[in-house]
Length: 312
Figure 1 (cartoon, rainbow, N blue to C red):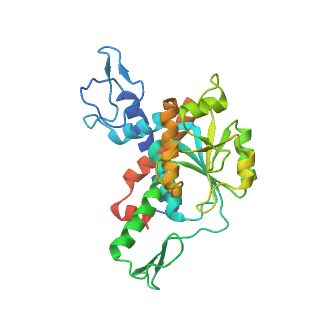
Figure 2 (cartoon, helix red, strand yellow; figure 1 turned 30 degrees about the horizontal axis):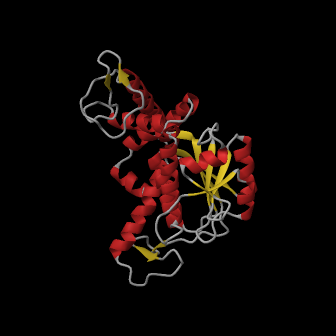
Figure 3 (cartoon, one colour; figure 1 turned 90 degrees about the vertical axis):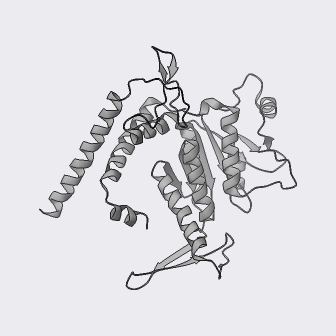
């Protein structure tokens, strides 16, 4: 069999499996009652006959990987976009992507930095038999006595971020203006995180005071922007934003690590407006299904050796 025929066969097989998975979801979506609560519930999934909530991610049901994907899709939001302006540290970058995926924020916009500081450099020997790794601090300082365990932990951290990217829509912009123009054209309001005097605390009371009691606390479409580790958002981003905001802290520290700040602020926005979760049109969900389901099917067809190769 030629390589061309092999490629066609694999593509056909993946498409067939994906089609079967989608069909299985339709036929397996008949509501079933359960008395237990399982993480990853589909919103508003009700059994109309017994008035009991149906847990679509329950381990007792068939096609759990597909149901888990459907749960994630139903809880995805496009109402909120995370914008990272010129992040210069790959560890923060990867942590932010993991946070976005875990919280269900589908879109992450990256305004490219002048240079990216890698915290893990890996090089293979000439014969490819061994990989030499150099571990660095976020400042760029080399950790001379880093153990294999520390190197392995950092490698896994990057791998988790790579896996998270498979389920996110990440868009890169060369300049702040390009990103601002895109957000404006799509109807998003822009809130920039800032520690300056003009910034408003992310509390219900302060936001109502700033926006007015009649205004919605969180806009229907919001882009929340985080700047560089050193100086925060650029002057261009701050002056172009609709609002400057900050998360109130209660200790001596007045700032946080970029990835930590992103996680706390984004999670706090979900608390201020729980309807952000699942805020996505059915057309957008359908588009995600057409991307995710074939990908899940292809992963099921990969051998253990192929999966290991993909992780490198």
